[in-house]
Image 1 (cartoon, rainbow, N blue to C red):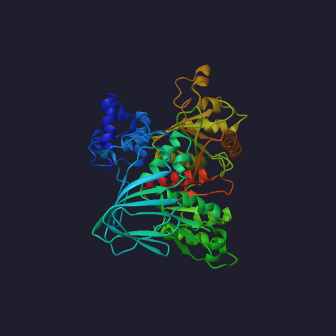
Image 2 (cartoon, one colour):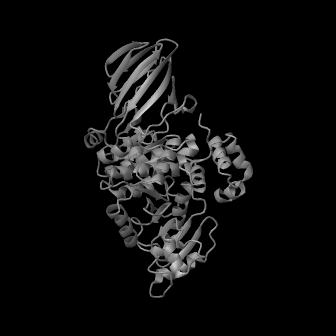
Image 3 (spheres, helix red, strand yellow):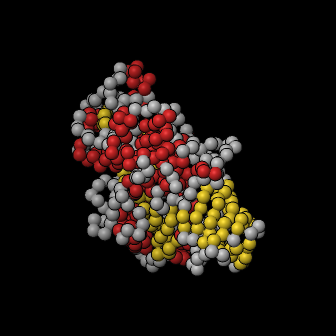
Length: 493
Protein backbone atom coordinates (compact mmCIF):
# COMPACT_ATOMS: atom_id res chain seq x y z
CA UNK A 1 0.00 0.00 0.00
CA UNK A 2 1.08 3.60 -0.57
CA UNK A 3 2.39 5.19 2.62
CA UNK A 4 2.36 8.86 1.67
CA UNK A 5 2.43 9.99 5.31
CA UNK A 6 5.59 7.99 5.98
CA UNK A 7 7.27 9.51 2.93
CA UNK A 8 6.37 13.05 4.03
CA UNK A 9 7.61 12.37 7.56
CA UNK A 10 10.97 11.12 6.22
CA UNK A 11 11.45 14.34 4.24
CA UNK A 12 10.59 16.49 7.27
CA UNK A 13 13.00 14.57 9.50
CA UNK A 14 15.88 14.34 7.03
CA UNK A 15 15.76 18.04 6.16
CA UNK A 16 14.86 19.28 9.66
CA UNK A 17 11.82 21.19 8.39
CA UNK A 18 9.96 23.46 10.79
CA UNK A 19 6.50 21.85 11.02
CA UNK A 20 4.80 25.01 12.35
CA UNK A 21 6.06 26.97 9.33
CA UNK A 22 5.03 24.16 6.97
CA UNK A 23 1.52 24.02 8.44
CA UNK A 24 1.10 27.76 7.85
CA UNK A 25 2.17 27.32 4.23
CA UNK A 26 -0.34 24.54 3.56
CA UNK A 27 -3.07 25.96 5.83
CA UNK A 28 -3.58 22.76 7.81
CA UNK A 29 -4.09 22.11 11.52
CA UNK A 30 -1.59 20.07 13.53
CA UNK A 31 -4.22 17.39 14.25
CA UNK A 32 -5.14 17.02 10.57
CA UNK A 33 -1.46 16.80 9.62
CA UNK A 34 -0.82 14.16 12.28
CA UNK A 35 -3.48 11.87 10.78
CA UNK A 36 -1.74 12.18 7.39
CA UNK A 37 1.75 11.49 8.79
CA UNK A 38 0.44 8.37 10.56
CA UNK A 39 -1.18 7.14 7.31
CA UNK A 40 -4.64 7.20 8.90
CA UNK A 41 -5.85 9.63 6.23
CA UNK A 42 -4.57 10.06 2.67
CA UNK A 43 -4.11 13.69 1.61
CA UNK A 44 -6.35 15.02 -1.13
CA UNK A 45 -4.74 15.64 -4.51
CA UNK A 46 -4.84 19.42 -4.00
CA UNK A 47 -3.14 19.03 -0.61
CA UNK A 48 -0.59 16.65 -2.12
CA UNK A 49 0.30 19.23 -4.78
CA UNK A 50 0.38 21.94 -2.10
CA UNK A 51 2.84 19.87 -0.04
CA UNK A 52 4.93 19.28 -3.15
CA UNK A 53 5.25 23.05 -3.61
CA UNK A 54 5.91 23.78 0.06
CA UNK A 55 8.55 21.06 0.41
CA UNK A 56 9.98 21.76 -3.06
CA UNK A 57 9.80 18.06 -3.92
CA UNK A 58 8.57 16.16 -6.95
CA UNK A 59 5.12 14.79 -6.15
CA UNK A 60 6.33 11.27 -6.95
CA UNK A 61 8.64 11.43 -3.89
CA UNK A 62 5.59 12.04 -1.70
CA UNK A 63 3.59 9.26 -3.34
CA UNK A 64 6.22 6.56 -3.73
CA UNK A 65 9.10 7.65 -1.50
CA UNK A 66 11.44 7.90 -4.48
CA UNK A 67 11.86 10.46 -7.22
CA UNK A 68 11.19 9.20 -10.72
CA UNK A 69 14.51 8.59 -12.41
CA UNK A 70 14.65 9.60 -16.08
CA UNK A 71 16.51 7.49 -18.63
CA UNK A 72 18.87 5.47 -16.44
CA UNK A 73 19.11 2.13 -14.65
CA UNK A 74 16.83 1.95 -11.61
CA UNK A 75 16.82 -0.94 -9.16
CA UNK A 76 13.65 -1.79 -7.24
CA UNK A 77 14.10 -3.76 -4.01
CA UNK A 78 11.66 -6.45 -2.92
CA UNK A 79 10.13 -4.20 -0.25
CA UNK A 80 9.82 -1.26 -2.67
CA UNK A 81 7.28 -2.87 -4.98
CA UNK A 82 4.10 -0.81 -5.29
CA UNK A 83 0.59 -2.31 -5.34
CA UNK A 84 -0.77 -0.36 -8.28
CA UNK A 85 -4.40 -1.44 -8.48
CA UNK A 86 -6.84 -4.16 -7.56
CA UNK A 87 -9.48 -5.68 -9.84
CA UNK A 88 -11.89 -8.53 -9.38
CA UNK A 89 -9.82 -11.71 -9.13
CA UNK A 90 -6.42 -9.99 -9.53
CA UNK A 91 -3.72 -8.45 -7.30
CA UNK A 92 -1.01 -6.36 -8.98
CA UNK A 93 2.45 -5.22 -7.89
CA UNK A 94 4.54 -2.83 -9.96
CA UNK A 95 8.11 -4.08 -10.30
CA UNK A 96 9.57 -0.83 -11.68
CA UNK A 97 7.59 2.06 -10.17
CA UNK A 98 10.45 4.57 -10.11
CA UNK A 99 11.47 4.78 -13.78
CA UNK A 100 10.03 7.95 -15.31
CA UNK A 101 7.81 7.52 -18.37
CA UNK A 102 8.52 3.84 -18.79
CA UNK A 103 7.22 2.25 -21.99
CA UNK A 104 7.19 -1.20 -20.39
CA UNK A 105 5.16 -1.93 -17.26
CA UNK A 106 6.47 -5.07 -15.50
CA UNK A 107 3.94 -6.48 -13.02
CA UNK A 108 3.73 -9.37 -10.59
CA UNK A 109 0.14 -10.57 -10.85
CA UNK A 110 -1.70 -13.00 -8.62
CA UNK A 111 -4.80 -14.39 -10.35
CA UNK A 112 -7.59 -16.07 -8.40
CA UNK A 113 -10.16 -18.49 -9.74
CA UNK A 114 -13.29 -16.54 -10.70
CA UNK A 115 -16.25 -17.61 -12.83
CA UNK A 116 -16.74 -14.10 -14.22
CA UNK A 117 -14.69 -13.26 -17.32
CA UNK A 118 -13.54 -9.65 -17.49
CA UNK A 119 -12.14 -8.66 -20.88
CA UNK A 120 -9.85 -5.68 -21.46
CA UNK A 121 -7.93 -4.21 -24.38
CA UNK A 122 -5.44 -1.39 -24.89
CA UNK A 123 -2.80 -0.28 -27.36
CA UNK A 124 0.49 -2.14 -27.20
CA UNK A 125 1.64 -5.66 -26.52
CA UNK A 126 1.80 -8.02 -23.52
CA UNK A 127 4.10 -10.83 -22.41
CA UNK A 128 3.00 -13.34 -19.76
CA UNK A 129 5.19 -15.88 -17.95
CA UNK A 130 3.40 -18.35 -15.66
CA UNK A 131 5.42 -18.66 -12.45
CA UNK A 132 3.04 -21.02 -10.65
CA UNK A 133 -0.42 -22.48 -11.04
CA UNK A 134 -2.47 -23.05 -14.19
CA UNK A 135 -4.33 -20.37 -16.12
CA UNK A 136 -6.80 -20.02 -18.97
CA UNK A 137 -6.22 -17.01 -21.21
CA UNK A 138 -8.54 -15.92 -24.02
CA UNK A 139 -7.22 -13.55 -26.70
CA UNK A 140 -9.91 -12.70 -29.23
CA UNK A 141 -11.31 -16.06 -30.38
CA UNK A 142 -8.32 -18.13 -29.20
CA UNK A 143 -8.05 -19.97 -25.89
CA UNK A 144 -4.72 -20.89 -24.23
CA UNK A 145 -4.22 -23.19 -21.23
CA UNK A 146 -0.88 -22.28 -19.67
CA UNK A 147 1.04 -23.98 -16.88
CA UNK A 148 4.14 -23.32 -14.80
CA UNK A 149 6.95 -22.18 -17.15
CA UNK A 150 4.71 -21.44 -20.16
CA UNK A 151 4.71 -18.02 -21.85
CA UNK A 152 2.33 -16.03 -24.04
CA UNK A 153 2.98 -12.94 -26.18
CA UNK A 154 0.07 -11.11 -27.85
CA UNK A 155 -1.30 -7.89 -29.29
CA UNK A 156 -3.08 -6.29 -26.32
CA UNK A 157 -5.42 -4.26 -28.52
CA UNK A 158 -7.30 -7.56 -29.00
CA UNK A 159 -9.85 -8.11 -26.19
CA UNK A 160 -8.37 -10.56 -23.70
CA UNK A 161 -9.01 -12.03 -20.28
CA UNK A 162 -7.19 -14.25 -17.77
CA UNK A 163 -8.61 -16.70 -15.25
CA UNK A 164 -6.94 -19.16 -12.91
CA UNK A 165 -7.83 -22.82 -13.24
CA UNK A 166 -6.12 -23.60 -9.93
CA UNK A 167 -7.21 -21.67 -6.82
CA UNK A 168 -4.48 -19.08 -7.48
CA UNK A 169 -1.78 -18.58 -10.08
CA UNK A 170 1.15 -16.20 -10.23
CA UNK A 171 2.38 -14.51 -13.41
CA UNK A 172 5.10 -12.15 -14.51
CA UNK A 173 3.34 -9.75 -16.88
CA UNK A 174 5.10 -7.15 -19.01
CA UNK A 175 2.84 -4.60 -20.69
CA UNK A 176 4.44 -2.59 -23.49
CA UNK A 177 3.09 0.82 -24.51
CA UNK A 178 5.51 2.95 -26.49
CA UNK A 179 3.13 5.90 -26.43
CA UNK A 180 2.83 6.59 -22.69
CA UNK A 181 1.63 10.16 -22.14
CA UNK A 182 3.56 10.43 -18.88
CA UNK A 183 6.75 9.96 -20.87
CA UNK A 184 5.76 12.72 -23.27
CA UNK A 185 4.96 15.43 -20.68
CA UNK A 186 7.82 17.95 -20.73
CA UNK A 187 7.20 20.08 -17.64
CA UNK A 188 7.88 18.90 -14.08
CA UNK A 189 4.75 20.51 -12.62
CA UNK A 190 2.59 19.30 -15.50
CA UNK A 191 3.94 15.80 -14.87
CA UNK A 192 3.00 16.22 -11.21
CA UNK A 193 -0.53 17.07 -12.34
CA UNK A 194 -0.73 13.88 -14.42
CA UNK A 195 0.61 11.80 -11.52
CA UNK A 196 -2.00 13.35 -9.24
CA UNK A 197 -4.83 12.62 -11.70
CA UNK A 198 -3.72 8.98 -11.90
CA UNK A 199 -4.06 8.69 -8.10
CA UNK A 200 -7.72 9.68 -8.10
CA UNK A 201 -10.69 7.37 -8.60
CA UNK A 202 -11.35 7.07 -12.33
CA UNK A 203 -13.86 9.49 -13.79
CA UNK A 204 -16.68 8.92 -16.29
CA UNK A 205 -17.12 11.29 -19.23
CA UNK A 206 -20.25 12.24 -21.12
CA UNK A 207 -18.90 12.81 -24.65
CA UNK A 208 -21.34 14.67 -26.89
CA UNK A 209 -21.30 13.83 -30.63
CA UNK A 210 -17.99 11.91 -30.53
CA UNK A 211 -15.46 12.16 -33.33
CA UNK A 212 -11.95 10.78 -33.82
CA UNK A 213 -10.31 13.86 -32.30
CA UNK A 214 -12.29 13.90 -29.05
CA UNK A 215 -12.38 10.12 -28.61
CA UNK A 216 -8.65 9.84 -29.31
CA UNK A 217 -7.95 12.11 -26.32
CA UNK A 218 -10.35 10.17 -24.10
CA UNK A 219 -8.72 6.88 -25.12
CA UNK A 220 -5.40 8.26 -23.90
CA UNK A 221 -6.96 8.97 -20.51
CA UNK A 222 -8.39 5.42 -20.43
CA UNK A 223 -4.92 4.01 -21.15
CA UNK A 224 -3.40 6.04 -18.31
CA UNK A 225 -6.07 4.93 -15.82
CA UNK A 226 -7.69 8.37 -15.43
CA UNK A 227 -11.01 7.67 -17.19
CA UNK A 228 -13.12 4.55 -16.76
CA UNK A 229 -16.43 4.86 -18.59
CA UNK A 230 -17.28 7.00 -21.63
CA UNK A 231 -20.87 7.69 -22.63
CA UNK A 232 -20.79 8.13 -26.42
CA UNK A 233 -23.83 10.38 -26.87
CA UNK A 234 -24.97 10.74 -30.46
CA UNK A 235 -26.47 8.88 -33.37
CA UNK A 236 -24.76 5.47 -33.32
CA UNK A 237 -24.18 5.32 -37.08
CA UNK A 238 -22.60 8.80 -37.02
CA UNK A 239 -20.45 7.86 -34.03
CA UNK A 240 -19.19 4.74 -35.80
CA UNK A 241 -18.48 6.78 -38.94
CA UNK A 242 -16.67 9.66 -37.22
CA UNK A 243 -14.78 7.42 -34.78
CA UNK A 244 -13.70 4.71 -37.21
CA UNK A 245 -10.38 3.32 -36.03
CA UNK A 246 -10.73 4.85 -32.53
CA UNK A 247 -13.36 2.55 -30.97
CA UNK A 248 -10.63 0.50 -29.29
CA UNK A 249 -11.97 0.08 -25.76
CA UNK A 250 -15.42 -1.46 -26.07
CA UNK A 251 -15.52 -2.40 -22.38
CA UNK A 252 -15.23 1.29 -21.46
CA UNK A 253 -17.91 2.66 -23.84
CA UNK A 254 -21.65 2.96 -23.50
CA UNK A 255 -23.49 4.12 -26.62
CA UNK A 256 -26.35 6.55 -26.04
CA UNK A 257 -28.29 6.74 -29.29
CA UNK A 258 -29.83 10.02 -30.46
CA UNK A 259 -32.28 10.19 -33.35
CA UNK A 260 -31.31 12.33 -36.30
CA UNK A 261 -33.56 15.39 -36.51
CA UNK A 262 -33.47 19.12 -37.12
CA UNK A 263 -32.43 19.60 -33.46
CA UNK A 264 -30.04 16.64 -33.39
CA UNK A 265 -27.07 18.40 -31.80
CA UNK A 266 -29.14 20.10 -29.12
CA UNK A 267 -30.95 16.84 -28.35
CA UNK A 268 -27.59 15.07 -27.98
CA UNK A 269 -26.25 17.79 -25.70
CA UNK A 270 -29.34 17.59 -23.50
CA UNK A 271 -29.04 13.80 -23.21
CA UNK A 272 -25.37 14.20 -22.33
CA UNK A 273 -26.19 16.79 -19.66
CA UNK A 274 -28.81 14.47 -18.16
CA UNK A 275 -26.17 11.77 -17.73
CA UNK A 276 -24.12 14.20 -15.61
CA UNK A 277 -27.18 15.38 -13.69
CA UNK A 278 -27.97 11.76 -12.74
CA UNK A 279 -24.43 11.36 -11.42
CA UNK A 280 -23.38 8.73 -13.97
CA UNK A 281 -20.59 10.99 -15.34
CA UNK A 282 -18.46 13.61 -13.63
CA UNK A 283 -17.17 15.39 -16.74
CA UNK A 284 -18.84 16.59 -19.94
CA UNK A 285 -16.92 16.95 -23.20
CA UNK A 286 -17.61 18.50 -26.57
CA UNK A 287 -17.12 16.41 -29.69
CA UNK A 288 -18.29 17.22 -33.23
CA UNK A 289 -21.00 19.64 -32.16
CA UNK A 290 -21.54 23.37 -32.58
CA UNK A 291 -20.30 25.12 -29.43
CA UNK A 292 -23.48 27.19 -29.20
CA UNK A 293 -25.69 24.07 -28.98
CA UNK A 294 -23.31 22.44 -26.51
CA UNK A 295 -23.23 25.44 -24.20
CA UNK A 296 -26.98 26.10 -24.54
CA UNK A 297 -27.78 22.69 -23.03
CA UNK A 298 -25.27 23.22 -20.22
CA UNK A 299 -26.62 26.66 -19.30
CA UNK A 300 -30.30 25.63 -19.36
CA UNK A 301 -31.64 26.96 -16.05
CA UNK A 302 -34.01 24.04 -15.42
CA UNK A 303 -32.41 20.97 -17.02
CA UNK A 304 -28.81 22.03 -17.50
CA UNK A 305 -25.71 22.35 -15.34
CA UNK A 306 -26.25 26.05 -14.67
CA UNK A 307 -25.23 27.24 -11.21
CA UNK A 308 -25.81 30.93 -11.93
CA UNK A 309 -22.17 31.72 -12.63
CA UNK A 310 -20.40 33.01 -15.75
CA UNK A 311 -18.59 30.32 -17.68
CA UNK A 312 -14.93 31.18 -18.17
CA UNK A 313 -11.80 29.54 -19.51
CA UNK A 314 -8.84 29.04 -17.20
CA UNK A 315 -5.74 27.98 -19.12
CA UNK A 316 -2.94 26.36 -17.14
CA UNK A 317 0.67 26.77 -18.32
CA UNK A 318 4.16 25.80 -17.24
CA UNK A 319 6.33 28.62 -18.56
CA UNK A 320 10.12 28.52 -18.96
CA UNK A 321 12.00 30.35 -16.16
CA UNK A 322 8.83 30.56 -14.02
CA UNK A 323 8.96 28.03 -11.17
CA UNK A 324 5.20 27.56 -10.79
CA UNK A 325 2.10 26.88 -12.82
CA UNK A 326 0.53 30.00 -14.35
CA UNK A 327 -3.25 30.29 -14.74
CA UNK A 328 -4.46 32.61 -17.52
CA UNK A 329 -8.05 33.83 -17.74
CA UNK A 330 -10.01 34.45 -19.94
CA UNK A 331 -8.38 33.96 -23.35
CA UNK A 332 -11.34 32.52 -25.27
CA UNK A 333 -14.87 32.79 -23.87
CA UNK A 334 -15.64 36.22 -22.34
CA UNK A 335 -14.95 39.27 -24.53
CA UNK A 336 -14.31 41.45 -21.46
CA UNK A 337 -13.56 41.03 -17.79
CA UNK A 338 -16.18 43.66 -16.99
CA UNK A 339 -19.70 43.85 -18.47
CA UNK A 340 -20.90 47.43 -18.94
CA UNK A 341 -18.12 48.61 -16.58
CA UNK A 342 -19.80 46.88 -13.62
CA UNK A 343 -17.31 45.74 -11.01
CA UNK A 344 -19.37 42.75 -9.82
CA UNK A 345 -19.53 41.30 -13.33
CA UNK A 346 -15.89 40.24 -12.97
CA UNK A 347 -16.35 38.25 -9.76
CA UNK A 348 -17.24 34.93 -11.39
CA UNK A 349 -14.19 34.97 -13.65
CA UNK A 350 -11.91 35.62 -10.68
CA UNK A 351 -13.63 32.99 -8.53
CA UNK A 352 -13.34 30.36 -11.25
CA UNK A 353 -9.61 31.00 -11.63
CA UNK A 354 -9.02 31.03 -7.86
CA UNK A 355 -10.83 27.69 -7.47
CA UNK A 356 -8.81 26.21 -10.34
CA UNK A 357 -5.56 27.22 -8.66
CA UNK A 358 -6.71 25.88 -5.29
CA UNK A 359 -7.63 22.52 -6.85
CA UNK A 360 -4.00 22.21 -7.95
CA UNK A 361 -2.57 22.90 -4.52
CA UNK A 362 -2.22 26.70 -4.37
CA UNK A 363 -3.81 27.53 -1.04
CA UNK A 364 -4.07 31.32 -1.42
CA UNK A 365 -3.39 32.23 -5.06
CA UNK A 366 -1.83 35.54 -6.04
CA UNK A 367 -3.99 37.17 -8.72
CA UNK A 368 -2.55 39.83 -11.05
CA UNK A 369 -5.06 42.01 -12.89
CA UNK A 370 -3.16 42.79 -16.08
CA UNK A 371 -3.19 46.08 -17.95
CA UNK A 372 -0.84 48.33 -19.86
CA UNK A 373 0.99 49.48 -16.71
CA UNK A 374 0.68 49.62 -12.94
CA UNK A 375 -0.69 53.18 -12.75
CA UNK A 376 -4.52 53.51 -12.92
CA UNK A 377 -5.63 56.03 -15.52
CA UNK A 378 -8.99 57.38 -16.67
CA UNK A 379 -7.69 56.91 -20.21
CA UNK A 380 -7.73 53.15 -19.52
CA UNK A 381 -11.10 52.57 -17.77
CA UNK A 382 -10.34 48.93 -16.96
CA UNK A 383 -7.33 50.01 -14.89
CA UNK A 384 -9.62 52.03 -12.59
CA UNK A 385 -11.92 49.04 -12.10
CA UNK A 386 -8.96 46.74 -11.49
CA UNK A 387 -7.71 49.08 -8.78
CA UNK A 388 -11.13 48.89 -7.12
CA UNK A 389 -11.01 45.09 -7.24
CA UNK A 390 -7.62 45.06 -5.55
CA UNK A 391 -8.96 47.28 -2.75
CA UNK A 392 -11.68 44.75 -1.89
CA UNK A 393 -11.38 42.08 0.81
CA UNK A 394 -10.50 38.68 -0.66
CA UNK A 395 -10.42 35.89 1.91
CA UNK A 396 -8.98 33.16 -0.29
CA UNK A 397 -6.60 35.08 -2.57
CA UNK A 398 -4.29 38.05 -2.90
CA UNK A 399 -5.69 40.26 -5.67
CA UNK A 400 -3.84 43.26 -7.08
CA UNK A 401 -4.10 45.44 -10.15
CA UNK A 402 -3.43 46.97 -12.45
CA UNK A 403 -0.08 45.33 -13.13
CA UNK A 404 1.89 45.08 -16.35
CA UNK A 405 2.85 41.62 -17.60
CA UNK A 406 6.50 41.91 -16.53
CA UNK A 407 5.59 43.15 -13.05
CA UNK A 408 3.19 40.28 -12.55
CA UNK A 409 5.68 37.51 -13.30
CA UNK A 410 9.27 38.65 -12.94
CA UNK A 411 10.94 39.66 -9.68
CA UNK A 412 13.77 41.61 -11.33
CA UNK A 413 11.23 43.97 -12.94
CA UNK A 414 9.58 44.42 -9.55
CA UNK A 415 12.86 45.42 -7.94
CA UNK A 416 13.67 47.89 -10.71
CA UNK A 417 10.28 49.60 -10.35
CA UNK A 418 10.23 49.59 -6.54
CA UNK A 419 7.20 47.37 -5.87
CA UNK A 420 9.01 45.06 -3.44
CA UNK A 421 6.27 44.99 -0.78
CA UNK A 422 3.47 44.27 -3.23
CA UNK A 423 1.78 40.92 -2.35
CA UNK A 424 1.34 39.88 -6.00
CA UNK A 425 4.03 41.60 -8.09
CA UNK A 426 6.63 39.13 -9.33
CA UNK A 427 4.79 36.23 -7.66
CA UNK A 428 1.50 35.98 -9.54
CA UNK A 429 -0.12 32.57 -9.95
CA UNK A 430 -3.11 33.88 -11.91
CA UNK A 431 -3.06 36.42 -14.74
CA UNK A 432 -6.42 38.07 -15.45
CA UNK A 433 -6.70 39.95 -18.74
CA UNK A 434 -9.14 42.86 -19.21
CA UNK A 435 -10.11 41.82 -22.75
CA UNK A 436 -10.18 38.56 -24.69
CA UNK A 437 -7.70 39.87 -27.27
CA UNK A 438 -4.88 40.19 -24.73
CA UNK A 439 -5.51 36.73 -23.34
CA UNK A 440 -5.71 35.22 -26.80
CA UNK A 441 -2.42 36.84 -27.84
CA UNK A 442 -0.66 35.52 -24.72
CA UNK A 443 -2.13 32.04 -25.12
CA UNK A 444 -1.08 31.67 -28.74
CA UNK A 445 2.35 33.22 -28.18
CA UNK A 446 3.10 30.82 -25.35
CA UNK A 447 1.75 27.72 -27.13
CA UNK A 448 2.76 28.38 -30.73
CA UNK A 449 5.95 30.41 -30.33
CA UNK A 450 7.31 29.05 -27.05
CA UNK A 451 5.87 25.55 -27.41
CA UNK A 452 4.70 25.32 -23.80
CA UNK A 453 2.19 22.77 -22.54
CA UNK A 454 -1.32 23.85 -21.60
CA UNK A 455 -4.48 22.44 -20.02
CA UNK A 456 -7.82 24.24 -20.42
CA UNK A 457 -10.51 24.26 -17.73
CA UNK A 458 -13.94 25.69 -18.52
CA UNK A 459 -15.52 26.43 -15.15
CA UNK A 460 -18.72 27.97 -13.84
CA UNK A 461 -21.03 24.97 -14.37
CA UNK A 462 -21.93 22.13 -12.02
CA UNK A 463 -18.99 20.12 -13.39
CA UNK A 464 -15.86 20.89 -15.44
CA UNK A 465 -16.65 21.38 -19.13
CA UNK A 466 -14.13 20.08 -21.67
CA UNK A 467 -14.30 22.29 -24.77
CA UNK A 468 -11.75 20.70 -27.04
CA UNK A 469 -10.87 22.03 -30.46
CA UNK A 470 -9.70 19.98 -33.42
CA UNK A 471 -6.72 22.35 -33.60
CA UNK A 472 -5.63 21.38 -30.07
CA UNK A 473 -2.83 18.87 -29.93
CA UNK A 474 -3.26 15.49 -28.28
CA UNK A 475 -1.18 16.55 -25.28
CA UNK A 476 -3.38 19.61 -24.67
CA UNK A 477 -6.51 17.47 -24.72
CA UNK A 478 -4.99 14.87 -22.43
CA UNK A 479 -3.75 17.46 -19.91
CA UNK A 480 -7.19 19.11 -20.03
CA UNK A 481 -8.82 15.82 -19.03
CA UNK A 482 -6.27 15.43 -16.20
CA UNK A 483 -6.94 18.95 -14.88
CA UNK A 484 -10.70 18.46 -15.21
CA UNK A 485 -10.53 15.19 -13.28
CA UNK A 486 -8.62 16.86 -10.46
CA UNK A 487 -11.05 19.79 -10.35
CA UNK A 488 -14.00 17.40 -10.30
CA UNK A 489 -12.56 15.67 -7.23
CA UNK A 490 -11.90 19.09 -5.69
CA UNK A 491 -15.63 19.77 -6.11
CA UNK A 492 -16.36 16.50 -4.33
CA UNK A 493 -17.79 14.76 -7.40
